[in-house]
Length: 345
Image (cartoon, rainbow, N blue to C red):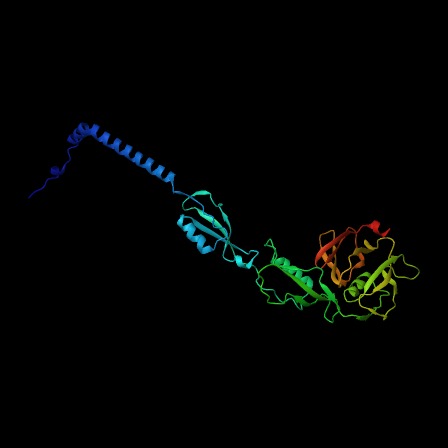
């Protein structure tokens, strides 16, 4: 059987005649399909716009988490959970807050923000015996900063008594350690004042410079009352020229020792001499004080650190002009003072 290429030739002329005869029908068909697609898109758009069914947010505040989740599930709502410590141990696992509020109308599938109690940050009284009372105060403040009602409240002032333990050491507490906390408790403490009739020897201050004096202050258990006057005769400017009581005298711990500096009247090589003076409240036991300098260039450094029972405070200094002197009590800044040449007049 023989095939010729002409047998497969397309008759374009007859094809065009058929398209012309049926063109109107084809145009109507295409137009109808387009209209149908537009209608389908409009219907889908409005269905999507309508969205999920609207529901009312249930009141689940104060309920257990498991109960709250079941109620949300029944409304086709979903939780977004955050944890937070609360004021009472019995609240652990309960809903503290919810957003949106109960009664709000929202669409099904909405996320509801829930804040759930982790319970109280502690549920038993710790043992504070042997710790420093000021450190315990800071510890308790840090525990309950996120709660509106602290579970442990210190009874102020504590009961102080003389004891061989270092001053500020907690000797007794009530309630005792491991007492369960069901409601806020008041913690009563017995605190050491330090040894009674503890005697020390007065150090030799004569001839000490300001820097040497500051070093001695950090190691002495006496309180220095410094004063100053211009140098006389052969006295070396910037040194201690007299003291009372005398060297090696036996005194009670934190007794006061008077010392007089011979300070130059004018700044020496840009250094200004003076006495930093403050009146402090009387403390039940000596507290740690820190004396720092902040230079005009922004450098901050410690001059001295020492224990002080309160009352009159005097600290010598020899620093450049415009230096800021900073006094801190138990690491809390208490006072600032800017040094100027007028202070020497």
